[in-house]
Amino acid sequence: MKRYIIAIGVLTIAFIATVSAQMNQQTLPVNPVTTTGTAVVAEELNKEDDSPNKKTLGAAAEIKKTAGATQTTAVKMSKPMTGQIVDFGALVMGGNGELNKKNAEALVAKGKPIAFKVGNKIYFVFNSDGSFAANNLVRYANNKLVGIIGKTQKVNGLNIIIADKIESMD
Image (cartoon, rainbow, N blue to C red; front, side, top):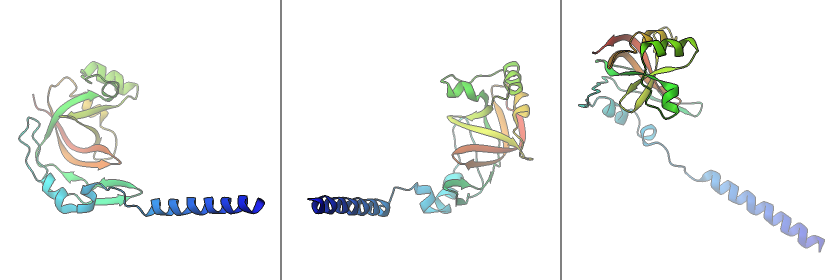
């Protein structure tokens, strides 16, 4: 009887090992942008957008696979990306994120994030020295439309703008 129990235990372990090995060999779906390379990314980035939030990106992006996260190199914008300054916390909690200068100053003083919204995309804005551009964004919180010229990139799923220039578009 002991032999049968041991044999069943060994067979169970062998079965689990086989199934586990087969699962590790399965191909998992991969984001098509990372598999097709820079040609598709360049094609997408060089398209002109005729929407109200018009933006043109004039360079190709190079896809890198680092530490399990997809990261694109910075892409220089030739025209301002237009959008509005928003309260990131309010957006996360389901609000519209609308912000005025007084509220923006209070949020920044408390260390809360403010962001730049273009259409349905949210961008975190940084200065060229790498510091968060919250104080620069506060100046334009009362404006309906703000334009930012700089470099865009995606880091670990976050949209980032490294701003060269921020200006009112009202």
